[in-house]
Each structure stands twice: as structure tokens, then as C-alpha cells.
Image (cartoon, rainbow, N blue to C red; front, top):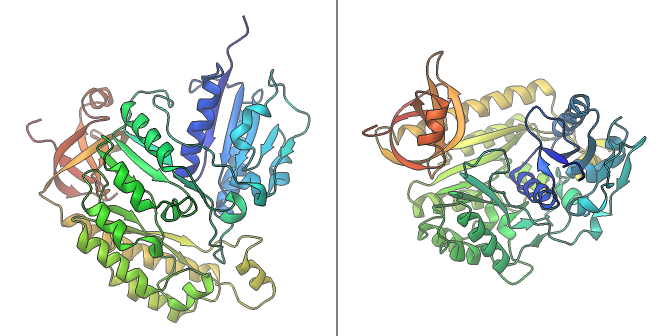
Length: 456
């Protein structure tokens, strides 16, 4: 009898990567592989990379070298966005056996040798991104992470992007926009529900464009998902120009699509938005956000903001700061500009048509925006103190002090809540994977709302 092969996967980056990683691993489990235990060296290690920033690239390389050092006998395959964009750089890392691009990664099994023998040099299979047209399935798999707490699942509904913003490499890493059929998406959502997941997070590169090339829409999908018997459906991120009124109305009347949007802003200056080649201005952004919060009760809005974009002067930053202060945003994700090769802004920097913002100024501006985010988050959370809200508890914990541990979960509108527990085992038996009403009491220094379960 042949030896049972063990598989492990390390995923970096976005929720979309995690959804795809689950599907990739599941394809190997069906072939007889089993997940490697925590302290067990796998026969096959897959590293699913991200390339959204230069820091992400660096983290990928560090992770690859760390994995190879810890698992020197494993066959190592590197896939994902960074593999598509810079395959030769990854192939040059000693110990990497295989590098696959966006088109190839979903057929990983076809490139893996039967006996998983180590290579003396890396093999690279990366197609031109223009040739990528298939939709690779991606969704969570129950029990894949070594436990059976089926709380939140990721479901890929869309891939690729045609927007070509001046700073972004995603179209070169992911290809043109494409969507999974409405029928298949509903089928997968029902399967995840039957597996016991309590929340499904819709993922993609630009999910607001869902269905635009196959004669349907995200609004149509939301209407159908509202009929699925899962307690919660969450939209991971949506471009402001695609947060249409009919979609907002559909979500408002849904019983399971939660009141939470992540709406990338990137800049609150119309001048900078124009330079970024974004498809909206601040007026459109404000209109969409106000409509969402005025139509959907308890709606929470998160936003991405890039600071230090080339050409961003102090007046542009002040405009952005003033604009964000006036919006009903619940929290910000603040990023310093990261220069990416093969982008329009990189070309403009090289030709000296625009100047980069010095690092110390970017750092100062990031600090000011983070302070604004903290203020807005605190103001949002304070509205709910003393209220009782339903929380889906997850297998996550936070040490409150030397004695107390908090079991963490989220409300529908994405408030992080922690409840004191006597032990982790007790939490697994009583909380995790369950939705429970809790009374919100106080906000701690990590912006976790400490709460209590009535009659516990």
C-alpha cells in the first residue's frame, strides 16, 4: 500500500485567496491526500501569494524561505498573484520546486510529479494574463483547518478587473473580469449552508461587477441568496460607483444580507482620485454612503485610504481629511502608497512627471488618518453600548489580562465583541459556531467591545 501523502497550504493576502486555497486543497483531498498536522512535515506545501504592495511581495519571499527552512523535504509549489507577476524571482529561491501562474494554479495536480521528488531547479508555468479566461472555483471547505467549527465561509463569485487604476497591478495578476454563473453560485451557497456554516462572505476582485458579462447582476444574486437558509451573507468589498440604489434597496429588505459594506475610497481629494484613474469623485462617494446608511438600519461602512500618493500635496491631504471627517464611516484601513512596477504611476515617476511623497510625510499623514479612524470607530461603537445584539462567535481569542480570556465574535454590522470565558475548551463547547444575544458593555483599548451573555 502506498504511503498516504500529506498536504499543507500557506495563504497570504485577501479573502479571495483564502477561498481559492480551500478549493485547491480540496482537489488534493479528493485524490487521497490528508492535511498535515501542525507539527508535521507535509509531502506537498503550497504557498498562495499576494502582490498588492511591495511589502506583500517581501512578506511572500520571507514566508517561502521560512517554509522551506521548516520543511526542507517538502515539495514546494508557489502560486498566486506574485507568481503571475514575477515568476522568475520566486523560482530563483532555493528550495522552490514549482511556480504556477493564474491560469495554471487551478490545475495544480497536473503539474505535480507523482512521487513529489524535489527539483534541482524550479519549473515555471505561467501563461500570459491575456489568455486567462477560466473561472477557478473558490469556496471554504468544512473541517479543512483541523477543526469542525463552521462559522464563516468564503465564497468566490467573481474574478479579474478591467478598471486599470493607475497604481494597481491586479488586472495584470488576475486578468479580465469574469463571473461564476448565478446557478452555480447559489448551489455552492446552499452546499456551504448544509455543511453548517453560519456566515458566507462573498469574495472577488471587483464583485460589484458580478454578472455584468453574463447577463445578470450583484442585485440579482443578492435577491437569490436571500432565499438561502444561512443566517448571514456578507459582501466583502464593493466599489462606490457600483453601490447602486437597487442593490442598496435589495439588501435593506433582505433578512440575511448583513448591514455592512467595505467601500474603498483611496483618496478624499478629487484631484488625486482623477490622477488615480478612479471611476468616481467625492460627490458620488458621499451620495452612495449616505444612501446606504439612511436606507439600511445599523449599517456599518469601512473604507480603504491610500496616503502619500505621488503628487499628493498638503492641501490634497487636508481636503481628504476634511471629507472623511464629514462621512458616516465606521472605520478606515490606512495604507501608505506602495510603488508597483508596470503601472501608469510608476511610468510617471520614472519620467519625472510626478514626484513621490517623502517617507516621513507619508508616516505623519498615516498617523493623522489612523487617529481619525480611531475616533470614528469609537463614535460608532458608543452608539451600541448597553444594547443587546446577536454575535456569531468564532475560534478566536484575546487576552484581556493575565487571568481573563475573551472569546471573540462579530455582530452583523461587524462589531468585534469579546465575552469572558473560564477556558478555551468551555468556549468551544458553548460559544464557537453559535449565534448568541449579548449585551454590549464597554470598549477596550483594542476596540473590542466587552460583553456579557444574559442569564449565563
